[in-house]
Length: 372
Image (cartoon, rainbow, N blue to C red):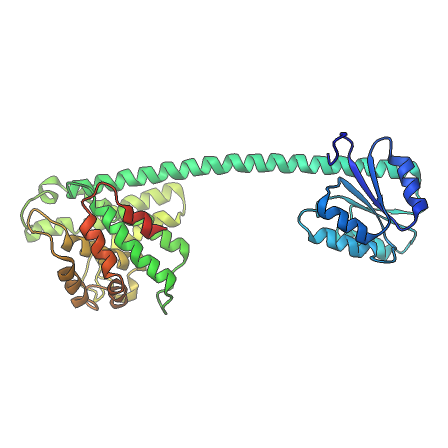
């Protein structure tokens, strides 16, 4: 209710004092009635005061009822207040116009007191019922949002654990995926903020790349320990086995997509898992894709993954300095890597190098800086 006495507030607007007094006599026992003599006064009142219903005269000298109604409907704070238009006209076109603009009812003068009282009561009941339904819908929507947020959080934790498990099979600390995510995020952010022909991506696709790149080596969960954990270099036969991990990973994700239905995050993860070892010149694996036939997500991951491999220590090699890794990345632009993406990397050498320097920290403040 709009008043403190628990009575609904009915704003009556008419330039005829006689009509205002008649309305007051009919409604005063059940409602808090506020009479005003012009549309201008009504709009001024509504700027600072609420109302539960408005009885609005059609023909007034300063602003017509339709003009006042249009202003009321255009204001989000007043548009839901039910309005009953009062008029001495019998022109059906006025009635239709009033209803089109937003009036809830239309009453001709002189009015029957019982008819007026009944129409006011019904409109207020409908108004209260509509507000109750909106409250129920908002409450249910809020509950669903909380449930969805919890499910999304659970899914994220599950994916993170799965990614960490796949990474720790191959890298003792399990931080490789974190650094690849950070490198990829830098590239994605550049593509989003610096549009370039052929390299325009949506915010959603960019977010999906960042969130799913951690699953790029998911297929390594299916690799035999004797091959995956071998401390020295692999034989040709062993390397052939390792080269199956993109297909194994994409197959796992394909099963997930079949069970869960189309999902942009999982589909992007599948792209990355399957094709992040493809090369720009078509000499990569598993499908020998070339150029822009390789999905953007996989091309970004290829650069980030190799840069981290070069700057990380392995049982068979020492970590390279960032400047030496950059030389390799640039030298292989157009053969291994997308040339434009290597140009993107060159714009962010300091950020890449900072991640390399701090990658042994347990927590990575750079990650939140890059992703936000």
